[in-house]
Image (cartoon, rainbow, N blue to C red; front, top):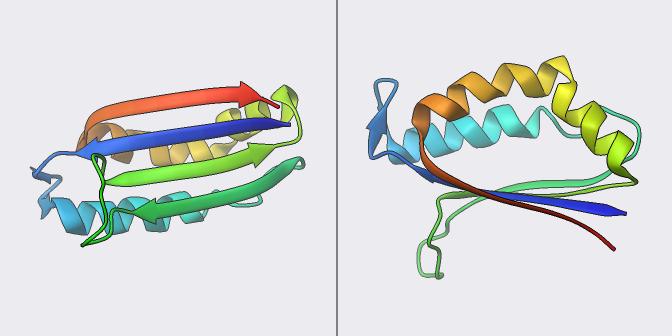
Length: 100
């Protein structure tokens, strides 16, 4: 199994909206990527929550059966459609993939 974890820090303002509005829109768009390929086992998108520690604004936690499933996800048209919006609103990105 392969885990794919990505965290984004968003710009205070981008695409005509503030950080919170962009975070919500980003979550909405990413949620559409759930279950789009065989072998996608878990897919969870969360926003930083008031009162809890967070150094990033949006996190994606996902699990895939294998590398082929992750590659299929990365190249899927639904995922590719989200990438330009994320690129426009993000200030920073951290990612880690690992096999267990």
